[in-house]
Image 1 (tube, rainbow, N blue to C red):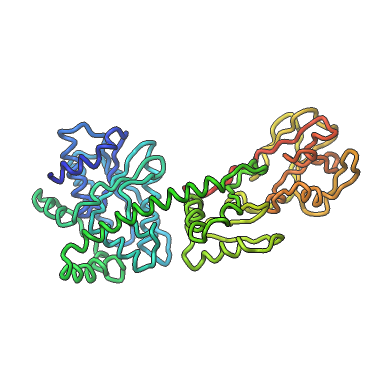
Image 2 (spheres, rainbow, N blue to C red):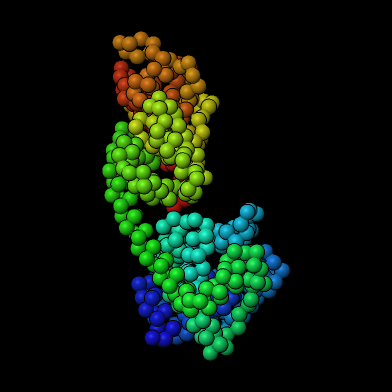
Length: 437
């Protein structure tokens, strides 16, 4: 099967996408992919093609690449979008550039679009070796998937089973021109060292090393698929209903998790956390054991990159973004017949007859008390304890004051105005901002 036919077969599931956007660096691999697609478009009914060049501005030579890419695209009749990004300084320039690049792609992609990238089989083998040397687990050693979701569309790597030598042969046959990144010769970058020092040595002893390593990545991806299925089964038991679901915080039943083996706990929790935060490395997983095994009256917190895992009411809770800080101050409510927007804390509604007098909304600072029918004045802290309100949510729970007297606590039956008053105080919290998807 020709390279062109193999590519078309690989892309069959995506033929109905609105647009195929080709990540076009101007290098050999993406030049071959772009040329293949432009030629196929002459004889096949393909989605609209658009090339996308991300300019990082990390080296002087790169300033000429957008012009080169434009010339190639003009020759092939494919429109080009050039996006300039700022790469954040950090420990790994490679990683920072990659993150900036994919953030740019994600912003460009429309619903159902497909981003096509030109990683090949040798790239896959290098990725597996690189992650193996970093001590990655099964998920990391699965290397690059052929396809995955990206923003509102998909990322597809249609050349992932094609050796680089085949791409080079195609480029020579069609007399293609491409740019060479000067940084590709810098062996301070780990991938360059693997490509130029390690793999040539391996290939002399094992000529099929790249192919077999890429095949192993496929086996590991299948194993990860089974682990994901197991995680989904375990999480189905832990994601049970509870009375504080209205808070909007993702949570899991601690007993259901703790009843699993340690390996299954980490597998299930890692699967759950992967949609919420960047996962911790092996050493930092001790934070889970500390949270799980803390005393019953403790308030343990496991701090991760993008948020925190808390324990309360027999559950583990994920807090991030707007859900983290407690609030202070008061907000006047001049017209209780209209919904009140609380800065950074959702919306509040008063259902029924509004009490006479000026109303305001505040937050717990300590020492509050309220009058209850048949019970007299009661300390708010004790009332919240009686209803087992999770401790981390108490500083965000709206309190309704009339003439500076506490008269209701949102969403808590018996305290929300429903006992002895003619109204009910209903709060719609901010949807917990997870930051990652």
